[in-house]
Length: 302
Ligand code: SF4
Ligand code: SF4
Image 1 (cartoon, rainbow, N blue to C red):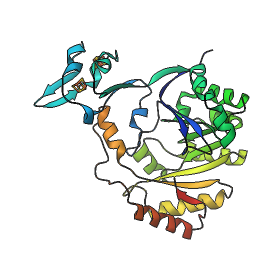
Image 2: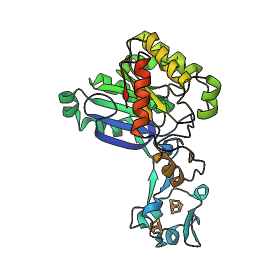
Image 3: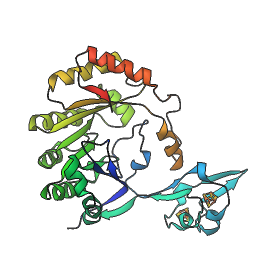
């Protein structure tokens, strides 16, 4: 069977998604809906129209080619009726200012491997490899499994950046073909986890435990969002995980950045986290000091 997935970006020569020089494959689709998501175009598993409103000159060429009346200009504002878009791509081609794109492309494992293999010498010389990211890359499970398996057969190092929200049965099957997990730890209380991400965290914690007991190398990634999880209680819980799992490779704090807000507007999502500002370096440094005082000596900014 040919496994396919909707991929919204492939970044070559990536240096921040695991060791060495890597190719990061960003897959669409996520079962969570975190308001602070910095890749909101990954939430939907489908292709979608993406509007760079800051590049738009309001020339109107997009409206002239669109047969679905998606593009409208009301009192000097270019509005988009995303629900009507048939994803034909005509407006993308018509726009001379690169203000429009279709986010997401269907790719087979072979398609992705062509891009992966182009940098194999760099992986070998730097200790790099591939990283599956998203969205939640395990949401398109058969494709993720097939791609990881192919890489391992070819001796390519594999990282997976995951929320951990996947069936424990399926997750365990992947452990032999994942070298490093970049595993999110978002919110301690399960009810709050559900409130802010849309799902509870029991299965996530079960998967974290299974991966650790299996011996997978794990970098715990902790997004810290002011007013939501920058609490002593949550930091204490991170330090308890650090004690429970002493062989964690690292703990990375991911301080909130508001760049996801613009992207949400670009794909027609109106709900944003406007009341929270991008975290200043002095605040992140304070969190690092606090966590180190709690015994997390491997903590750093991710
Ligand atoms: S064609 Fe491009 S620049 Fe012109 S109105 Fe449409 S989106 Fe804006
Ligand atoms: S992709 Fe096609 S249907 Fe969608 S807005 Fe552009 S021209 Fe219209």
